[in-house]
Structure formats: structure tokens, C-alpha cells
Amino acid sequence: MEVRAFAADAIIIATGGNGAIFGRSTNSVVCTGSAQSALYQQGCFYANGEFIQVHPTCIPGEDKLRLMSESARGEGGRVWVPKTPGDKRDPLSIPQNERWYFLEEWYPKYGNLVPRDIATRAIHKVVYEHNLGIDGKPMVYLDLTHIDRKILDRKLEGILEIYEKFVGDDPRDVPMKIFPGMHYTMGGLWVDFTQATNIPGIYAAGECEYQYHGANRLGANSLVSCIFGGFVAGPAAVNYARNLKAASSNGYFDAERKRQEENNATLMKADGTENPFKLWRELGDLMTKNATVIRYNKNLQETDAELCKLLERFRRINLSDRTQWANTSVVFARQLYNMLQLGRVIAQGAALRDESRGAHYKPDFPERDDKHWLKTTKATFAPDADEPKFEFEPVDVSLITPRPRRYDAVK
Image 1 (cartoon, rainbow, N blue to C red):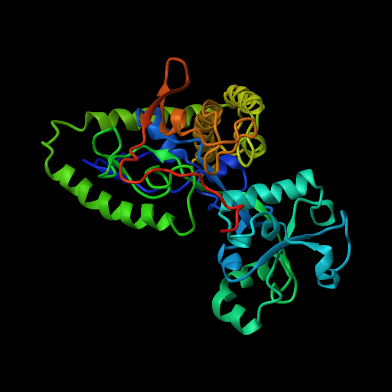
Image 2 (tube, rainbow, N blue to C red):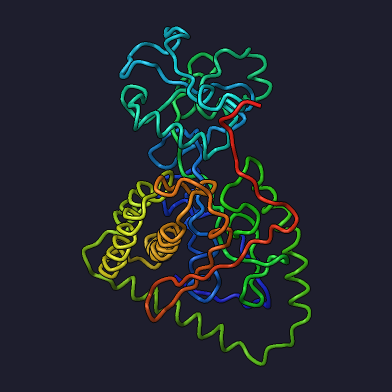
């Protein structure tokens, strides 16, 4: 196992979201947030870490969650549950008057087309407060069976095949069973309008940076940060590199390579009792429970305390694989440490923001508070204290004045 340093005058980080911090998510399993966390620990601002989007319609899986695209709702899919708790009947045999189309009832103007955070909270409420999950489990129906098969095949064939492949039922004939899951990271590395971080020469584009979404990402807007952000970052990084003076030596790269080799050696020699994969599962369960759909300050503070305990337990890990060839255990252990550090940014940032804004929802603070919280959270790592420190940056609203979001009124 060899560590190499690739010298560069400028770099562009495009490493995606941090879904693995929440265990299973719709992200690729390689989206750990590790690169962002490593940069945060070396001085980059991490902005709006508390803003995490949960997608309302996901297909549960053992390895990860699979996205059932919003296009299913956009093309006429209806979300419902049986009105009777524990109803075991085949969904197609349940009469219309015994089904509860709760999104259509609660949000008559938008119905099933309400934004993701609204739909997600509604599904959670129906399942956990009304106890109407399918078969008593955390699931609701997403129904396309009333739409002509030819239309479904023309417009939605790809996503329907995904469901059929992983569940075994044909959504053209049987309502799909879905539930919300962690989906997108609105927060990320702080960047300016040239996609530059606060460390000269480091740029970021895509889901790993924070700039375009605020507290909620609307459907397809990830393309803004991905395509437009990349379009800006590329020329900016080239221009920065071209205007740099030549470095006198590569001593820094040699020193950093040595530091990384020492980190790997320490992990390889660790002979504690903790399994890093078990720690990761505990991290995911903890973050999903307390830092996704509904947030309470007490739970968030307890989450941060538990993250500190997980960091302490990390110091006592034991890698099952000590080989020097293709050792994925040591790579995962390095990423796990970075996930734990970034998890603290998310939990502490969420605890500080005493309001409800977009996907960030606190029942104890149910309203958006523009007077006190129309600002960006910026976290920096304090190595002496081994924890994040926070400052805030006002949001420029001079061009468009914010207004309340309302989906529950017919106009």
C-alpha cells in the first residue's frame, strides 16, 4: 500500500454529498463526505451543514436506499394509506372511500406535488402519529396503477424497472411501498462566486459545496451546482494556477505524504476491540433518528455527546485486514473518522438554528425566523478543542425579498 502526493497549483473538489454519515441513503455508498471533512479539518469553512434533504419516496434496501424519482408524483402518482390501521387487504381491493390521500387533503392547492420537505414530514406524521403505516411498518403507498400503461412506459419506464428489479412487484399493476430517506446535502464547503473556498487554490463544485440551495433543494436544481458550478470552477482554477509564481520546492508535499503514511501505519497497528463498520452503523442510526426529518435540541445535544463517544471509541478500533494490498478496511477507517467529525458540524449547527427553514424543521420553533436566522452557518475546525466553532454570514436578499412558503391554502 503506497501513498502518493500529486502536486497541483489548484484543485477542484467534486466529491458529492455525505449520505454515508446517515448510514443508508440514496447517495452512492462512496459518498461519505470524507474529502469535505478533511478540508474542513485543514481550515476550509463548512457552510450550512445542518441543511440535509430527505427524499419522501425511497425504496428501502439492505445496502442503500434507492430513489423513486419525483417524476412519479409529477406524472400523477398519488400517495395514500388505508384509513384503517393494520389493514392487511390487497391495496387494489381497498375501495377509494377507504383510502386516505392525505397530501391531497392537507395541501389541496398542490396535492401530491408539494416540495420534498413538506411531503416527507406529512408521511412521517401519518406513519408515526396516526399509526397508519402499511402493515404497521414505516411505509406508505405511491400509486401509479390508475395511469395508462402506455403513458407509464413512455415516461417512467426506467424508474419503474428499478422498483420491479429490487422489490419484485410491477408498479404498473401494484402500488409501490415507499418511505423517506436521506437524499441530498444542501450544505457543504463554503465557496465564493468563483467557486473558490477560503483556502487559496482549492475550489469546489457540485453537492460538496453549499452555494445554491439554501435550506431546501428543489427538484433538478442539483444541476445548477453540478453543471454551472463546474462551468465556473474550471476556468477559475486554471486562471489561478496560471498566475502563481513557481514554488521553490516540493517540501510540503513530501511532508504531507509522510504524515499520511504515519496515519495509515497507526491504523494498521491498532489492536483495540472496536469494529469500525459497527461504529459506522451506530453513527448512521444516530444521525438518521435525530438529525433528519424532525429535530429537537435535546436530541441534537445528546447526538453530539454520542458522537464524541464514538470518536473516543474510534481510537480503540481493530482492523480485520492488515494486508498491504487493496486494503479497503484502512481506507474505510480513515473515512469513518472524517464522517464522525463532520457529523458534529451537522448536529451542532442544527442545534444552534432555532427556527424551521426548508428541510430544517424544529417543532419547538415551527416558524421561519428571518430576523435572527436569515444567515449562513460557517463552521471552522478548532484542532486544540477537537470540535467545530461557528460564525455567521448574512444572506443578501436585496434582489428578491423572501416570503412565507404556504402550500395549505387554495387560491
